[in-house]
Structure formats: structure tokens, C-alpha cells
Length: 262
Image (cartoon, rainbow, N blue to C red):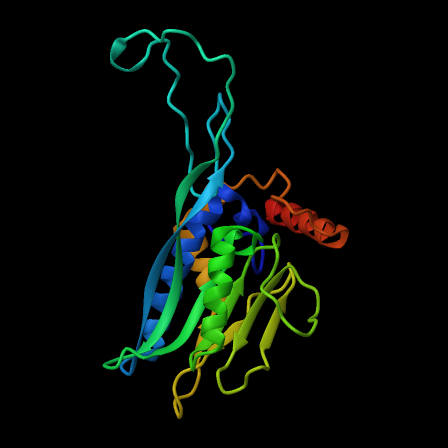
């Protein structure tokens, strides 16, 4: 079943949906590109692991954007069945971290394995200042911008702090940016409104090869249907934070009512 929305679906930004969507989106981008860029190039997934701090709930466990962590029930006895001599006078909590796998799609030249284009799909931790994954991503971004590789950033998350640009762009909930190595510091930007269809963006290759097209609408639609998100998402509830603008919220309500009536 397809999404009821024409472009990006804000309900996918829910933490329990996003981690699954992020990995599948990267895999679909790789698969679609490999239909376009062979035999001279190959797209491949490059995983990296960071750690996400989760909030611990003593009864219900914790729900990070990568799964569910539930603490073991406390025992009245110490290890090995030996009774604790005296109970501690107080209890507190420590931060719990769970591993979070993020993916980059890299387009490389066959034979030399030269990096041609890096496609980064931003995750919530990439947009959280002070988070290890945010600092790591900004360092990687600076390294790519200093290199001869092209950089595409796909930001399908309304929340968090976006990677910096030196000139303002039209406000939008979603963005795609393309930094061509031969055009820096100029950056191509696709501001995407909630009601917009997702664009077909160019993926630069080596001269004199033309750009490869990447149809983001086709990619997201395939991931949505394969992930059965229509069965997981409750569209009767408001979308996850941050809140939509009044205009977008009104449009979303009208769209969902119209889709339900079909």
C-alpha cells in the first residue's frame, strides 16, 4: 500500500520507524544507482557505527530510534545467590548507550575504487549538536568538501540542526543539497515542501560522463511499500515532532481525510 502523501511522509520520522527506513533507503539508493551507472562505476553501502543515548524508563524500558532497551529486573539477592549485606541508601541512573548503524552510499570508479560521489542520508544524531555522531559527521563533511569527490546530502528530517550553508535558502521541511567538486563553494539546493513530490536529482560522475538520475520519489515509494509502513503508522495520530506549521497541518489533515474517503 503506498503512502497517502505525494512526497516525504513526516510520520516516517518517528524514532521507531526512522531507523528501519534509514537503512532501507540507503540500500534502495544503491540498487537504483547500480542500474544506471555500470559498467564504469559501482555504488556500495558503507556502514559506520555510532552510539545513541537512550532514556531509561524503569517500568517500560527505553525506546531509542534504534530499538527498545529494557533493563533486567532487579534481584533481591546479590550475585551467586549471596544476600546483599545492606541496601544502598539511594539509587540513580546512568546514561545508557546503544549502537546505531548509519550508512553512506558511495559511488566509486570500477578498478581504481576512486571515490566519485558520497551520498549522505542524515540521521537524527547527525543533526544533534554535541552528539558524537554530529561532530563525527561534520568532520567527515569537511573532509569530503576538501576532496575531489562530489557530496550529496539528503535531509528528510524536519528536526535538529541542519549542516551549515553560508547563504540562506528558501525555508522548507526537507532539503537535498549537491556540492560538485568543480563548482565549490557553490551548492545546488532542493528545498522540498511537505506537499511537493520528491525530485529527480543528478548524481555527478567523472568527466565526460553525464550525471546519473536518482528519482527520490521512486526510491522512497519502494522503501515505503517494502517496509509495510502503511500497516505500522497510525495516521489518526498527529505526526511526530517538531510540530508542523499551521498551513502544513491543515493541508495534511485535508489530505488524510481525502485519502481515507477514497
